[in-house]
Amino acid sequence: MIKIDADAKINLGLDILGKRDDGYHDVYMVMQALEYGDTVVLEKRPGGGVTFETNDPDIPTDDTNLAVRAANEFSSEFNSEFSDEFASWDFGVHIKLKKRIPSKAGLGGGSADAAAVIKGMNLLFNTGLSRETLMKIGARVGSDVPFCIIGKTALAKGRGEHITPLHDLPKCKVLIVKPAEVEISTKEAYDSMDGANDIEHPDIDGLAAALRQREPLDKICALFGNSFEKMMIERYPDIGEIKDCLEKEGAVKAMMSGSGPAVFGVFEDEDTFAQAQTAVKSAFPGAVVIATSAR
Image: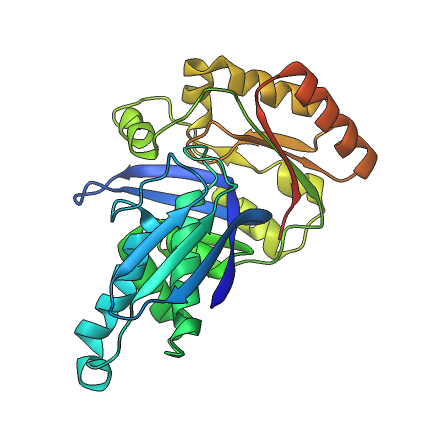
């Protein structure tokens, strides 16, 4: 049995460069793993195949689930690339997922679970694959999976599969607030940006440089930006209200993560962080509030 943490992520910077011929979008992002997430437990399953169970009844258990797809892709890697050596190997696995990351929130929950399965199977079956090979498998499952395999702080290009590690974000607390009864499909969010004329393009190169140069937290945060944010605030005003509340309560910076609707605030001071938690819970009853830290 193997137990793996599946870290949630936020986007410190997200720029949409355009739609590709394959239907995906080229993006340019800085991503950050959090000390908060799901737990994935893997057990060998004699006889082959993949089975899945979770504490969340709303999550599908078939191969539309990214964790199940990840297990199948891991097995396929050996069927196609290492068939002579591993033909007799049984990669049957049972996946138990304890879900904490809110779905359709812009926090990468499905990708995190898939990455945990890929890393966990590499350990469970003692296959010794390199991180680069694990990332290649992950890229076939989802665009954010390669980052979730690496974690920490990283620059992402292409569909999100080309990853360059960066220096860690300075020590800070992160408060995440997902507005009640708002879920945003990533695909629908990207499709809604096609043809938009007023897309904001954050300075991703500047943000990456600030991280590499280990600039102070406030200078790094000043370069945060998200191409989705303006449109999503227009559609879902709660996002903008939460952002304003977090900054009023002392966040160095507050911004929507990914395609939303979750908003995160970055805090340096523990007391301010604690007071902000109380404030947002009072101001937005029913919202999901997560107190955590950057990895």
